[in-house]
Length: 258
Image 1 (tube, rainbow, N blue to C red):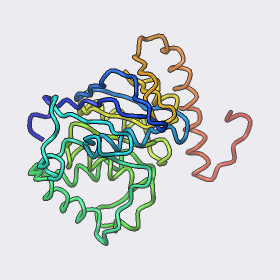
Image 2 (cartoon, rainbow, N blue to C red):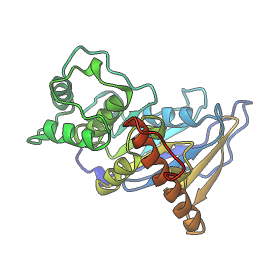
Image 3 (tube, rainbow, N blue to C red):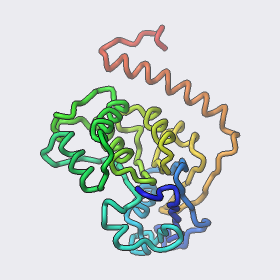
Image 4 (cartoon, rainbow, N blue to C red):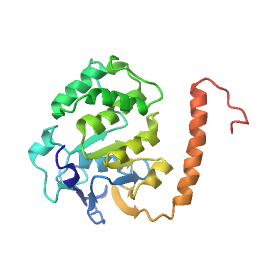
């Protein structure tokens, strides 16, 4: 997408479930930003990213308003896939098209107007970096597992949609390698908003949006005070990853493994 680095998304306050106005300063999102959204189930996390994805103009249940470069986005930007600066991957991302992986990516590349050479092969390779169960470009989309599908869609958003803003709903539940996803997002200078219950994902972001009762109740900025906690959680995650992979391989986990 041209001029991707000049894109700024602003989320303006709306109303909570009781109809009370939200009390937060407009939240600005630019390429390179890593933001997490946390809160109990039903607190409004997914509604927050849905508002961004549809470029809400006080026409959703939250009545929030989304600005692109300080103005309301044009209908063209909202409706034309080649011009929309936002891609969203949800918990229930599925593809019902009876196409091969390669055919699906080629179709999406054409829709997005992406003319980069070998981009489809690159997207397949990147998707396979994110999942332990590798897939082939000739496989049918409908035959992919949930984790494989999510990995493919993330790779598609990064390379083929190539949008500056990516919204990810609970990547930790997809059975994918979240560290590899986060590394790629950083390398490609995307603005990313994670809806997450994962402590590690929550703490490594620069800002953490706390939701409750359908509203933003706090925006916490990283100050480095959680660095020790991040290291502890990362170590625990790595140990769990080893155990998870061994279980997948049919191993029995003995005391020595722990």
